[in-house]
Length: 474
Image 1 (cartoon, rainbow, N blue to C red):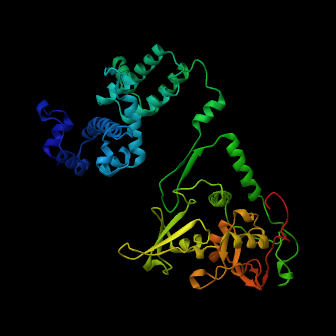
Image 2: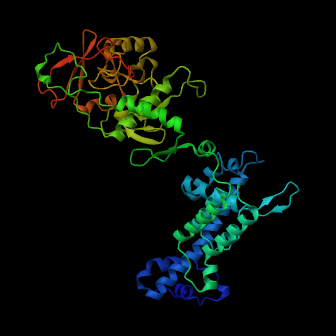
Image 3: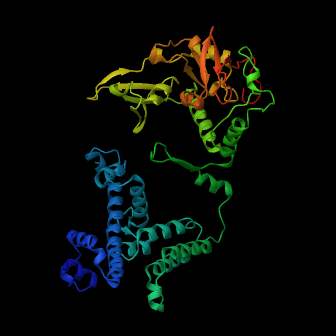
C-alpha cells in the first residue's frame, strides 16, 4: 500500500498547513507507483509535474542569481570565493548538472528576471508574462524556453503593444487559462510550440533581416562533451567558409586511384607504386571528411604565423602513466579524454605534442624531449624526398602530413631523415592495422601492400616528389 501521507497528497485532501510532500513522501510514491489505481496514477502525474514546475522555476532563478553574483565585473565575485572561474563552474560543482543545462537555466533567468534602472528602480522582466507564470509554477521551463526563444527572434521588429499581447496570449494558452474559460482540453507542448511560432511570424511585419546580417549572427561552431571516444561537433558556417572547406574536402575526397587492367602482381620490386594501382579504402565519406579536417587543423597548428598560447605554439599535451607506457591495453589522456596509449606514441611524432609521463602518485617522471621530434630542417628534407603521403592512392600533400618513425623511437629508432617518412593523419593513425608496411632501403622508403592487394608481400619503392603527379593537391 501507498504511505498514507502520499495518498493524502495525491488525492488532494492534505490541509493547507501540511504544505508540500516531504522527500519521504516522494520516495514512498516512487516505490509504490505500481499499487496506485488508474485514477490515482493520473492524478499523481499531474501533481508531481506541478511540484516539478515550482522546483524548476527555483532552479532557474537560483542559477541566474549565482551567475549574476559571479559576473566578471562584480565586486567580490561569488564564484571566486568558492574557488571557481565563473558561476557556471560553481553550479556544476554544486549541483552536478551539465553545463548545457545550467546555461539554459541562466539564459531563461535573464529573460524573466526583473531589471534595475540607473536610479535603482525595479523594472519589469523582459518577458514579464512568462516570468509571472514561471515563478508561480503554472508554466514549465520547456514552454518558457520555447515562448521566449520564438518571440525573442522578432522582438526588435515587432510593435511593442502587439508584442506584449502576443506574449500574454501565448502564456494564457500554454498554461491552459484560455482553454479553461472555453471548457476545452489544455494544449500539449507541441501545440504551444506551434502557437508561439505563429505569433512570431505574425509579429515579423518588416520581414527578416537581410540574409548576410542574419547569417553573420547565426554563425558558430561548438565542441561538445566527449562521449564513446568521440567529441560531437556542431555549428553553422557562413557560405564562403563552407565553400572553402568543401573545396578542400573535394580536392582530397575525389577517387585518387585509377583502376587498371594491369594486375599489381605483374609488377616487381623495382616498379614504383603509382596512382594506377588498385588501392582499397575502407573509410566512409563522412570518415574521410573527418580525416581531411584533422590534417587541416594540424597544418594550421604547425604554421609559423599561428598565434601562440602562453608564448609557445599551440601544443597538445598527452599524459601517460608510467605503468601504462608500454602496456598495449594502457590508456593515456588528451585533456580530460581517455585514449589508447598507442595514440600517445603515434601523435608524439607530429611536433605539436608534448608527452608527460607520471608515476602512480602523480609525480612527473619524464617530459617529451625536443629530440624526439623531427626538426624543421629534417622535415624539409623528407618533404623534398617524399612530396606527400607515401601510401599509394593518397592525395594529402606534404604540408598536411605527419612524419612517421619507420623504426619506432620507443624501440630505439633514430630521429633521422633515413628513418622518417611522410604519412597523412589517417594512414599514420591506422598503419599498424591497415595491412600496409613501410621499410627504409638505402635512405628511401619502400612500401608493401596488404595481402588482399598483392599477396606476394613485395616491397616496392614509394612515390616521391619526382614521380608524384602535379596538381592542386601537390
